[in-house]
Length: 209
Image 1 (cartoon, helix red, strand yellow):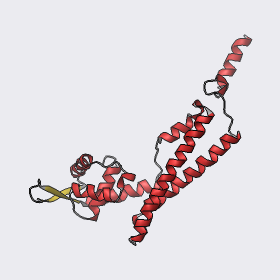
Image 2 (cartoon, helix red, strand yellow; image 1 turned 90 degrees about the vertical axis):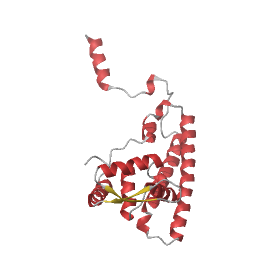
Image 3 (cartoon, rainbow, N blue to C red; image 1 turned 180 degrees about the vertical axis):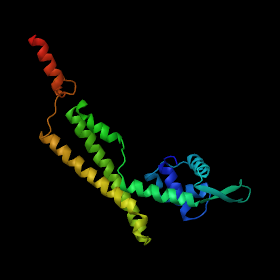
Image 4 (cartoon, one colour; image 1 turned 90 degrees about the horizontal axis):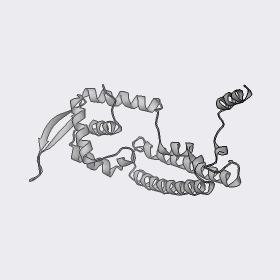
């Protein structure tokens, strides 16, 4: 069985709720704001459902027509699909994945910009994340108002917790940079780069010969 994409797991999750067709699946994902977790487009969703069928994880169970609109095929999850969903979720929950977020890369290379630029950029990011926290709070207010089981919206509380932790780190780091606790040199200066002790030792040996 090939590795499933995040969209494949989201589609299987919807099919596990009951037979449906891709357009209705897309509308449900938009309503639930699933774009927070996966990139959702009607075309890619139709393609993904077709791939699940090819893999034996879903199957067509009927067609219907609404007025003059084209026929829509209804799909259902198979027993193999339920197993793939179950086993895949267990693995994704338990095993940390190797991910490469762009912010991690930017932090690793932050010494290549000036101190004031770093402060401005990190502060702007903290402000942007605060807006996302406010959005998460709005979603939490809605789901709590509907008295939905908490297991259905654990992802929202998780996202909010992660965003809040990032903001705390960003604000603390900006304060440390501004106090001078984090040494900052000229981004273009050679003295600002880490010393390669192996190269230094080798060059010293060459000079003593």
